[in-house]
Image 1 (cartoon, rainbow, N blue to C red):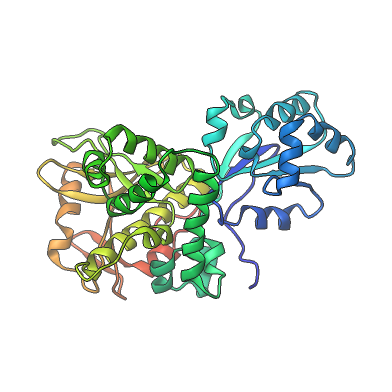
Image 2: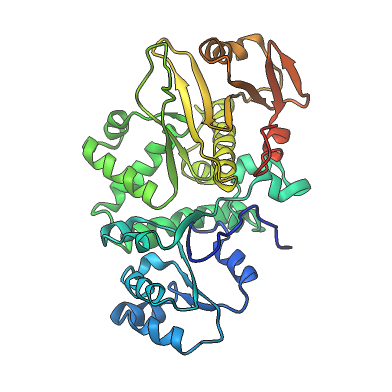
Length: 383
């Protein structure tokens, strides 16, 4: 498959590039820095040698003076390397370091300070609709997500299943992050029902038949592996009583689909609605990040039950976004947005739906999902 141009723009100087496995970090870096000294820590022999003697990195860099860039892929596998990188940067070496990672957990556990700010941190997200252009297929994205490793596969369903299994085996089991792997797998299934929903860890713990504290630890693992993220409640200048619990989203909708068990009692619109909302959330998260916006992604929910799925708030943007898995816009679909607007008349209002027409209804811009997602281009306003 032809290389897909990415919206990601690298910073100058040294940087970390984080992102879940399969988001295309290595592919992008190999294309961008074809002459780099490449150290892939997924190679067992290299990982073993550098873990035994991290200062070997200094020798490798000194032995390749013609290489202007050094890429250390999956740096979290040998956190001690960062001490050597830090020393080389302090010595004003001409070499530029790019360090990738798919987990922040081992770096945190080792007390690593990410080079004391001498390297900035960036994130590579799954594909965005705007990156794929005309090849973007909404139905396909809702079924299998937008991880490049899955999108490019001839058998996406099997690749997605293998991808989730790889994380459980290589990242969780191999690193001994949990003692009870079976309990963690039950947690993954239970937490999939919390995708695009207000997070209730007590209920999840009850479903898994484990303590709430155990579930908190499991969720921390999921977030450290960059497979999920939480969205807080929007509380600025609150005029009503609001809920306090965050919402949860998987970082890619395909992971949600792979983990969410399907059965005869499932309503297609329920699963489809959560999938569409998650797809919009992951796009907004990437759009904020790639645009380098000083903005926060949140949601709004009152104790009375009014809820706006997503809110983007920052100095340059304030938008409330409701996502509906329907082909028609009904007046009742606008109710929560209009309630939000009554409290925040400064906000732009968007309703994203599965129809084909862009409409303006009671001051709410109603945009087809494909058009909204395709219009999310870094540096440009919302569609």
